Image (cartoon, rainbow over all chains, first blue to last red):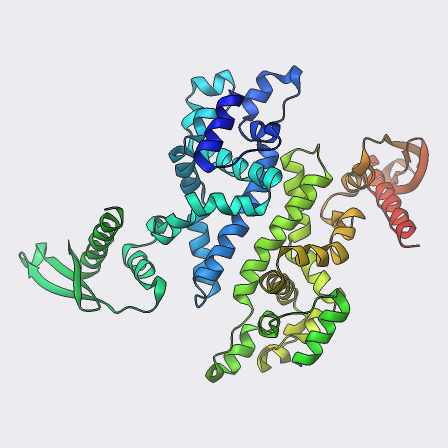
Length: 234
Length: 234
């Protein structure tokens, strides 16, 4: 399993560890260490402690330079949406980190391998292990591959309302005019529906329907975001 | 004032800024920026956002290596006692950072210059500004002068109970036997006092008196800590 893990990390992230034991520690859940208590095995928690702080700083630094004119409050909200457990768990799964975790038997039987909190812990511990073994520059190389492009494409904006997310995405490189216009009202008074169209610098980016103007605007922004994301992928 | 600030930072920390404006930003409170809104002055909050993360990582890394055998929970508690507002405010004052802060008039009149939250913010912003202008290595040089020796001497153990703090201080370099012994009980039953003596590897380190055994032990540990701290200073 150590061999497989080393190979996976080399192939996926281009990182070769000097001390394999640090990498193995990052992929050892406490339940495994408990199952083999007589062997005095280290679990991932200390590396997770460190990796959490490494991510906090690297993401803060990235946002600080990417958004030179945004006030602290917006940076703090963005950082929170990126380093929260749900986001990191998704990354762990995308890069198949969970497949290499050493788990205790009970934990395995209860499908612990796919629990979001475990996935997030493993991601943080992995980043911690790269930091300990290879240093900050290599951590940044890894994050340039797997995390920063996602920030640029707005992948962490899901916690925000759609209008804010659309604005954040479009205004990365400067102020852009975004307008929401009611283009239709339909249905009887007690079942009124609004149709809102969102225009960016005068061009239509999407439409949304809702029982209130506000709901229709949110839906229009949502559709605009979806078509922008499809555009990025194609 | 900019000249004075630069001089103070050079003399006190040995750091010369390439871009003075970053240092000035770290010492500009939002109340000052608000008082001079027409000049569009940057306040310290973005640098504070960054400095907070820089401190989180540098302290985590320091503790990770200093205590190679301590579990994550203890590292987390230690880190919290170091980076909490009260501790950082004390550091800001000790190094007279508050004297150089640009404050709004109202804030100045209300003695904002000495408010712990402002002091803490300025300390974090200062660390952020060193990181932005000079990079991590210079941050570490500063912290080696002003913060890490305090960690070593147990200066942040005040949040802990005295017995824990004494244990933390003494066991930095390995396990040490600490024993508490009741050496006297005095007073009538309804006003009983206990006298406890604390022994480290068999040597007496201090005595404490209390209305319960537990309180007497805490006081003995407190006195032991005090005499150890005096020993460190002399």
